[in-house]
Image 1: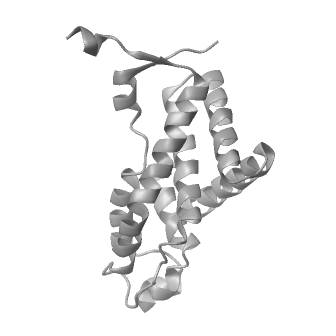
Image 2 (image 1 turned 30 degrees about the vertical axis):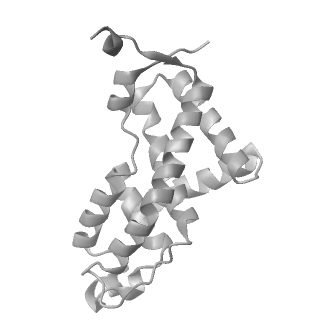
Length: 181
């Protein structure tokens, strides 16, 4: 009982490590399944043949979606510091400068906003971004293809998939306490 009451303290740097490692592991372990689900989705009349080696686009959508949720769980300054640390960690993984990686993240963020307009629902935007980033429109039936919009049934299934790649902050806070300087 006492062990449950003691929470591990984490600073923003350690939180970023945990966050980045968990996202990378989730993508490494789950992207093959995501590809299979997309390729087998009944919304497509042709198999899109999404390649398991094209996970970078998916990862970037997942990163942006998760970064958007930081403001829901942290004060502005804390969210900004955590965001900065996450960018720093990912920049190192991709052998980019922090500025270069932040620019890529901002491009993806703008893209998600554009394809999701006028909705502000982040999860829905992530699903729409996946649809467009993987050029899935050409594989739909004529009706949706001519509108250049994803089949709503596909989007609903994609939302369910994307939920598996969103950080569960509530569960995290049950185990950890953050400590900012």
